[in-house]
Image (cartoon, rainbow, N blue to C red; front, top):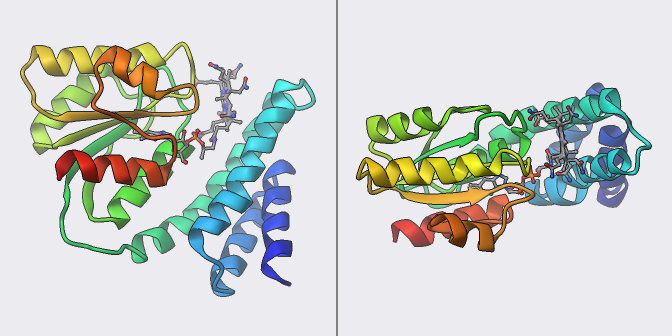
Length: 213
Ligand code: B12
């Protein structure tokens, strides 16, 4: 099977919510030497975006959304080690804590950002999803992280990012803050006093690098 056909099947596996197929196709893609970024951006991520659109259009309901996300995560479990192994300059660039803000359980994008940052030489503490504001601040202090990276996928949880920025500043913790997630923008980052915004995992690495440079 050529790589275009593989990528199409990857998208389909997520749209159909077929975790076994997603896992197998991720393995096949890596074995065939298809670039990891291509597997993600043109394969699985396109699939989950399509699921999101079907959900918005009322064609998919929550069970289909969940199955799509599960298939995406099954693929990610195969791909993550490949991202980590492909790390370029492995010299330590800095320490970061990352998580999805409280009230928000979306963790696919956050996990991608964490993997990409680790691959590029950051020491990343992944706090998971639904992370309380105080946990972000305490873990930043505890690990001495230079960067705090926060994901939010819901317009209702974005405000938690502001609470973290405010609490960090209030406690005099000098870490730089990077925000991201589908509803987040550079304008929002500016508004809440974050130091950076990234629209993708690749952008996240670029912003992180520039902030610790
Ligand atoms: C998969 C999914 C789910 C899965 C999540 C599974 C999981 N473990 O993550 C499940 C089914 C559980 C789910 C649940 C819900 N979801 Co949902 N979900 C999605 C969906 C389809 C895709 C999200 C995704 O994974 N995208 C793929 C990843 C790779 O993209 P990403 O997250 O945007 O991340 C990239 C960038 O944003 C960036 N990035 C991300 N984080 C960070 C962080 C930093 C620091 C940086 C720099 C960059 C960065 O880099 C990433 C990689 O390139 C979106 C639709 C959409 N278009 O986003 C809806 C969506 C986010 N969900 C939505 C909703 C409403 C819900 C529910 C409330 C539904 C319900 N009624 O119960 C619940 C929320 C539960 C909760 N409390 O959190 C809405 C949000 C609407 C809004 N504006 O607030 C969306 C937009 C769908 C829609 N159009 O209505 N969801």
